[in-house]
Amino acid sequence: MIDIPMRRRTEPSQPTSEAVGSEGADGSVQELPRRDGPFFRKRQEPVPSPESIVTHASSVMQRVAVTSVSEIDSLIGELERLRDFLRQESVRIQREIEGYARLSEEATKSTKIIAESVAQWKNALESIAGRRTELR
Image 1 (cartoon, rainbow, N blue to C red):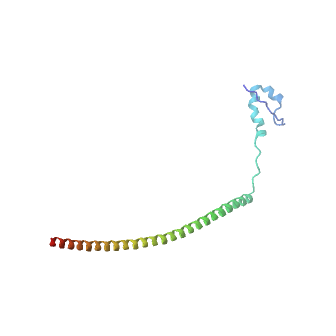
Image 2: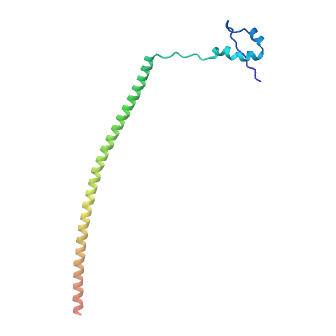
Image 3: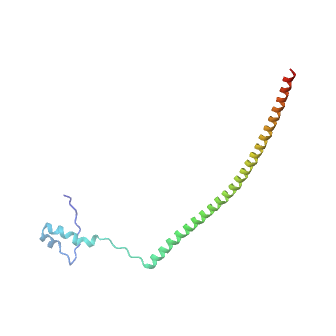
């Protein structure tokens, strides 16, 4: 068993050590928490006034609001920059698409010209080949 040193305050309303000793060991152990209880209790902090609570709450809310407003302003600025970027990119992509459309038209025209030229050469070669066979 562990021996715990006992601290006792003597108050007029509490029995003295002689009176406790007359009760016996069991009585003193049971009486110890009741007698020394107020001595070990925590001292209560003073309760702040309602005005100071309101002032503190107002201060906290103001700091949170300022932070929130600045974050929202920052997000709005970032979104506006992204909107401008997307508009510029859409104009650039539109120009690219128009360029590819013109290139595709030119490629189609060139392919038709080449196909017509090949057809003419084929006809010319066939007519030359037909003359040679006639001459023989």
